[in-house]
Amino acid sequence: MENLEIEGVKSTYFTPHVKLNAQTGECSITGESYLEDTWDFYRPILNWINQYCEEVKDPIKFTFNLTYYNTSSSKCFLDIVKLLKEYQDKGGEVEINWYHPEDDEDIMEEAEDYKNFIGIDINIISY
Image (tube, rainbow, N blue to C red; front, side, top):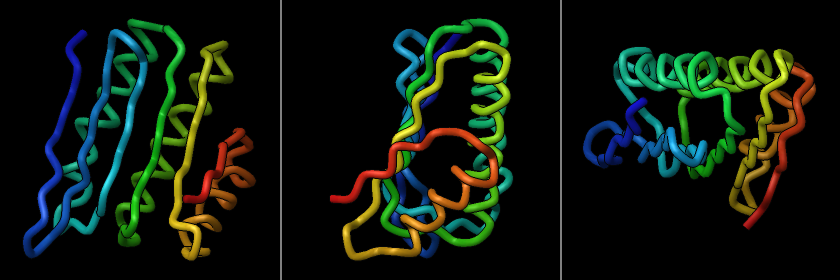
């Protein structure tokens, strides 16, 4: 299985930096996510996670470290967390770390909502 890396871009719209490592199971989405075609951007990421969970079946450590994202990006993050929960329910080992600026309660509360709604442990870490 191939790694997936997408370089973050800042212009009219912002795309986050994405690193998904099939050998180590370490995955991250960092930066800002304010996209025009959010679904098109996140579809390959969701497909990669599905493939990893079906083929590799090793532990996965997923880190979210975003300073800003729009509502459509939030929906995609929810889809990612749901996939990770499904993998965990099938016996996969999952660790989710959600970093947020210390003064940004919205990002922190979003992680808490995902945690409570999906029923998966999320390490919520301020910086």
